[in-house]
Figure 1 (cartoon, helix red, strand yellow):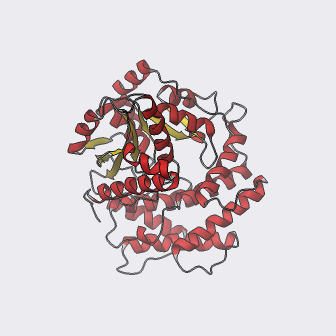
Figure 2 (tube, helix red, strand yellow):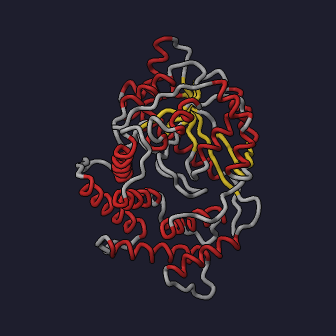
Figure 3 (tube, one colour):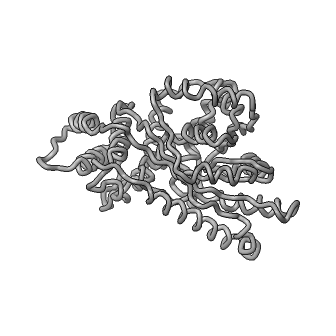
Length: 398
């Protein structure tokens, strides 16, 4: 396993970074406007002196920066749980910066005991705010919520149980947060231009009157055809979801053989993808240096990364009335897979909303009687509140 990264929050540095935040946004994004729904500030003010597990949806790579911006807007300090490979080696600047900004690591897919202990420690302290993305991966879809990963609810219930031993009046809250992204202007022309470039590379010509949604789907299917042939994947599956699942399974098998590792057959695809990517990260960072992967390693790693990007893609992704934000993300996935980079602009508006917080103590009795039942009840409630709030945001279509 990679070394665990413990948060070493520097409050003076946090203050400075928040002051310089507009400059950071200007240099990195040029423009990124944060819009809070009416209930956001009131909710965070009400929970200011409470311990809160903040659970946002994970639709975009902008999410961590947007959540940091939220901490600035509500004038509170958040800790962040982040995938271990994001930190780099223990000698890198990014590693130190993330530590000092309140981040700590988790090795996804593995039984990361140190991370679980750190989460427990944060949640049993007064007034702490911890951000965890419960979907576990980026969905790349503005209006879609993936199934939530296991583990968060059990950790919250266990911590709440221990907290109440010290003081029966204390509790832990889970706050569902919804992030939505918008372009401030119409980027339809740029989407069409990039989509045409993808079609040309794949030697495709759209039919007259074909919708943007159908064109993107056809490109994905053509690319999928090529990958299936390259990796000798059976085409017996009829649905897009099944075909993508079969391709992921094949890429996992290839990487397992390449890395000479065995994984449990009971483990889901996402967990297997995380573990295999961790193995590559370990070989890269374990000696304290940020060395580039070898060309052969890089091929396998990039294919695993591409497989991970598709975990939330399915027929539901290709509605006729596709939003320009979702269309841009799908074209970005195609461009990155084919050309190795994206050229479309990122959305420059981030809307943030919250659902009603959940008092974890309300599920303790059920948890104490039968742990699995209590965990499932809390997980179902969190998922339901996130989905309900997700549907309340408006949609800009193309």
